Every structure is written in C-alpha cells, then in structure tokens.
Image (cartoon, rainbow, N blue to C red; front, top):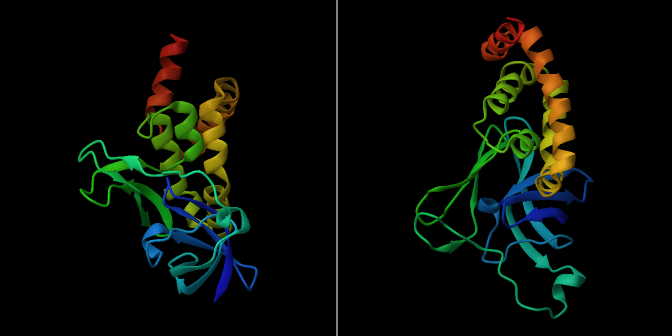
Amino acid sequence: MRGTVKWFSQKRGYGFIVGQDDIEYHVSVRDVSGVTLPANGDTVEFEVTQGKRASRATRVTVIQRAASAAQPARATDDRVVCAACQKRMVPRMITYRGEPKKSVCPFCGTTYRKFGCFLATAVYGDYDAPKVRLLRDFRDHVLNRSSAARAMVQLYYRTSPPIADFLRAHPGSAAAVRLALNVLIRFITFIDGKARWIGANRRNDGQ
C-alpha cells in the first residue's frame, strides 16, 4: 500500500502514515526499511500488519521525498548521544500491545526515554512520579477494559506528544494542566481506590 507520512519524529522513533484508504497507521522506526527515515509529507510504500489493538505499518520504504525535504537545505543531524556508550544514534522505539513504552539506544540497549502518560510526565517532571504511576495504573486497569476507552487512549497517544513538548517549554501552562490533573487524580482515587498515599495525605491534612 502507498501512503503519506502525516507525522514522524526521528527523535522519538515513531509516527503515523495516512494510507490510500484514509486510515492512519502507526509506524515505528524499527519497521522502516533501508537507511532513509521518513519525514513529514513523504510518500511511502508499506505493508499493513494487524496488531493486538490496531493495524500498523511495516516494511516502510520512502519512495518520494516531500517537496520541502527534496529542496537543498543546510545539513541537520537529528541523532542524539547515548549517555552510556556515547555514540550518536536514533533511539529505537519499544512498544507493548501497540503502545509506546520506551526508546533505547540501538547500539548498547540503554534506555534513552521512557513513555507513559506524556502530559502527566511533562507537568510532574518524572516518568516515575507517584501521580504519573497512578494515571498509568488507571489506564491499564480501568480504561483498557473498554473498547471505547482504548480508542480514546490511542487518540491520546497520537495527539499528546507535541502538547507535552509545549508544556515543558511553558511552565505556566504546565501548572494549569497540573491543577486539572490533580482534580482527575482525586476522582480516580475515589472511584478506584488504588492511590492510598493520596488518602493518607488527606487524613494528615485533616489532623
């Protein structure tokens, strides 16, 4: 099948392709054939593989660069330096059940970045922050039980990365989102009962 790259991040190692059937397919850097990584607007050929939750693009080959990419421009290097082996590399995406979990160095396997709740990680500043873990737990044990909620989660993963980058660059906006997430977390605590540490903090505040 042929399609057009809607969005692809070499830094994150994944993106989305709109096929001739007008369906969006998730693509990981590990599914790209050859040495040329796709860029926004490129025309590609790919095969469709049915994942556990959604179809994804595999054996992706760039057959025509977008007009802007084909024009001469100053050389750029989107690679990053691995903290462990010090080699310049494009991180490889690791997924689980169709969801991005982390990116790793293709040379030594060291984790470059962990993924989870993009917005929560951005506003709380740590992938392993207790509130971020609570939101991931709510996603895994509550939202993923419903097909409609799973579709919402997939939509969230498609749209939230650029928003998360914006929040990291704008602390004021991040603070507003953090307040909203705090309300959501209190609601989750009430209906799910999985965040005992929040309940303990409430009791301590009432003393």
